Amino acid sequence: MCHPAWGRALAAAQRRDDLIRLRRVRDRIDREYARPLNVEALARGANMSAGHLSRQFRLAYGQAPYVYLMTRRIERAMALLRRGDLSVTEVCFAVGCSSPGTFSTRFTELVGMPPGTYQRRTAVAAAGMPSCVAKQVSRPVRNREAPATEPQLA
Image (cartoon, rainbow, N blue to C red):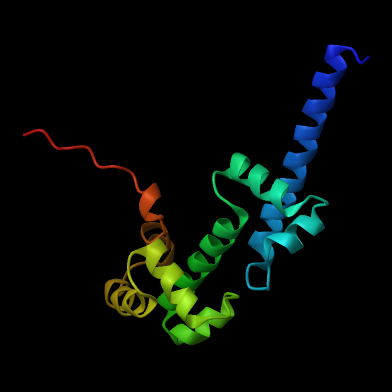
């Protein structure tokens, strides 16, 4: 029978190893967001099962790997749309999405408006605004993650 301290040490080592692998998965998503990625491929690359990867990723980063991937893709799409030299369809494929309809749906969920509307509005609003400021003020926030506003007391 193992000493209880050994069991705790093994569990801590496993958590550390999982966190290292999860960081590598997150870094891979950040680097390869435009490539075809799915949870199974990410899990294989991390020597984890897809279910274990999804559960551990959600615990570590607060969202599923697919949601994280789509958020990175939409952030990049926002930057490309602000540039204004690509169509919405070209942006869709440039960020790794294979369906313009799905891209538009996810973009609208995350940003709060369709990509075409975003492109038109940012073209007008960005006149004279530095790109670093435009990027910061237009960072996507999922509707359910948006901070609740406090009622104003008069």
